[in-house]
Image 1 (cartoon, rainbow, N blue to C red):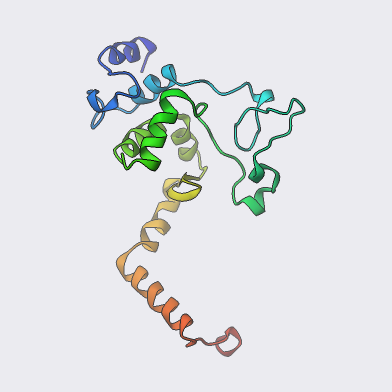
Image 2 (cartoon, rainbow, N blue to C red):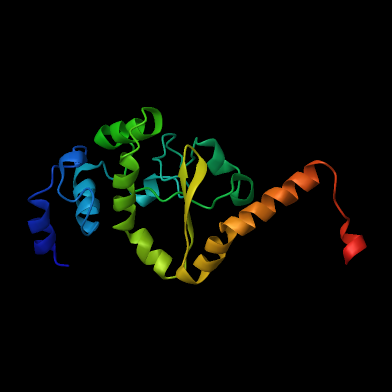
Length: 182
């Protein structure tokens, strides 16, 4: 899709933050959402001026990040890095707060459209897996298609039932040691 086509598409958007009035909010190609948002959001600091883990700008002047999890190491924090699309300021901050704290769950759809139109999907197609979080907790997983079967099976009703039963058996002490069955 050319920039001219995107510009044409963006002529009918409602501008980021007023997405409920936009013609693309529930259908159509997600690239206009990503492009519209990118035009309105505060860009990230240059790579050498921000943390390589959380993408927040350094504020200490010595290249040290004050975000606690960034200094914990990948294994302790549970992730290697956070992929940010902009600074959490202005309209984006207001919409995130609406979603996270004020029950405006429709913003999940908009944020999803922005994510789908971003470079993340290209990387997933290339084999990289991502975890999308909400309030620091996993909310969604983006997997390359070859791994999708495992995720579907893991959430199939029969497997979910069996896991619940197994956890209940473990909780009440009905377990067998590995040595007894191996």
